[in-house]
Length: 114
Image (cartoon, rainbow, N blue to C red; front, side, top):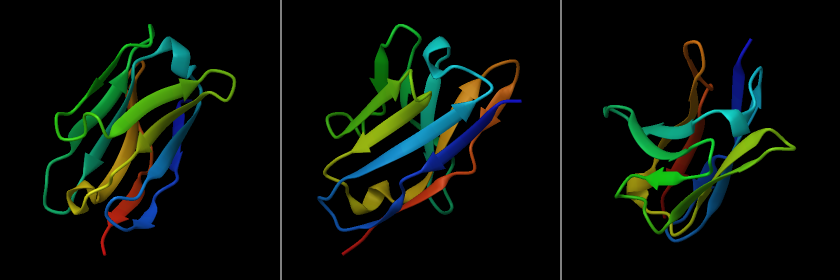
């Protein structure tokens, strides 16, 4: 049974940082393409960042240079380091993997507001 559990969201001011975590069970994050998505109220869910089995990363244009996706094999966890946060980054952030089906975590709320 694949499970993804996100954590690390919260309320921050513009310009501050947060690190999101996605703890996986039932799969190894190093053996799969792992992705972070986000969904703002009234908006479609959008891809934010991904990391391949080989460690290659890709980012949405809106977060390039500010967000970094990484993983820890020993902890079987994927991270999303978010720096220089903006109000438009406010959304629920979801971890995602496709492994004999598509799996999502429950999401973690990120709110950027002064």
